[in-house]
Image (cartoon, rainbow, N blue to C red; front, side, top):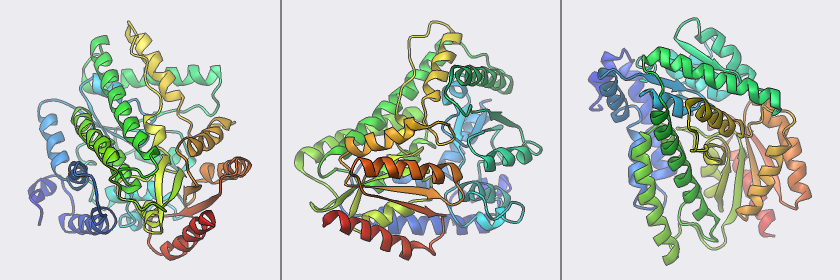
Amino acid sequence: MSDHVQMWEELGLDVELHEKVLASIGASYETIIASQKNRPEGMQYFDTVIHESHGGRVREILDAKSEGRKMLGTFCIYVPDEIAMAASAIPVALCGGTSFSIPYAETMFPRDICPLVKSTLGLSFSKTCPYGPIKDMAVGETTCDAKKKTWDILAQKINFHVLEIPQKKTDMGRELWLSEVRAFRHRVEELTGNAIEREALADAIKLMNRKRRLLADMNEFRKAPRPPISGRDALVVMQGALNDDPARICDRLEMLNAELADRLERGVSPFPDDAVRVLVAGCPSVMGNWKIHHIIESSGGMVVCDESCTGSRYFTHYVDENGSTVDEQLAALADRYFKIDCSCFTPNTERVENVVGLATEYGADAVIQYILQYCHTYNIEAIRVNGALEKAGIPSITIESDYGEEDEGQLRTRVEALLESVRC
């Protein structure tokens, strides 16, 4: 049994079931991530971030709450973490990536909705999410219909705030988004009792920009002919970045990047010379979900770039740090987050062009579009993306899947066929 059992009991978790959840995720992590050969030593810290996401990190947040700080649970990278941080609140991503919890959500919600939504809700309904009892407010957004209607239900039960994401990147859309960012600022101030001052917001902006730059630096190493880090490990780093303390993970990223530079210089890589370079585009792979990356990299490929919310969409673009007033800083935040090219936008030529651009920039031999089941915006947009990739002469396939293991054999067959076609 874990050292954190008493804490989980005090939080009202179903400890026996929670142990089973952790055992399931731990076994998967051991098989898919920890068993890789020739991993960077710096990955040990990020392994700990994953393993302690329900333990040490929760205890850390509880200690901060005992000092009067608040925790915000978030579900999307559109939430401006800088605003929460400037009010001394702690933003933590809550999305679930395990199939274990999905049946618990299906007792209330339809089966035919996004597995990410069901996994996240299932962790709460089954009393196996330690963040549920300790969050002071949850923050959702309007990027998809399943989420929007889920927020309607959750808002009746818990303290909930919804950010409206415009559907068009027009001047009117930008003004709407700026008004949402301003409203979020006031909601956070009400929650925390702390006024957001220019200096605190400037510090938060600089810290988050630092994290983005360090993540971008790590991904630069993946452009090498034989990257010094696997796609699976790069994904673990991204997942950890959504959960861990920002300042601490920045320090660890600097150490990891220094090690990757040394490995690159010495020609150390987890990949053989003939591995096929693959860009994974589309839906995020949140903590607990390493499925598609494992299939690719255990079939002779190497994931060299992730065009997703657990990839380039998270760290691309920075917030202008020159705002001299809070209003100017909020406008700069709105501008940066409005650049995220989610598939919820229409028209969305921006993302189509970005996928092709990233495939070229990272020297991808092929692109695999990874679509979570029932994610209609990415699934339909895949048609245009495939067309653009075909025009650019880049082979691609589209994979639609959930978090279960039942289709892994079928998916592996399709991935292996794609990789073989590239080699030929």
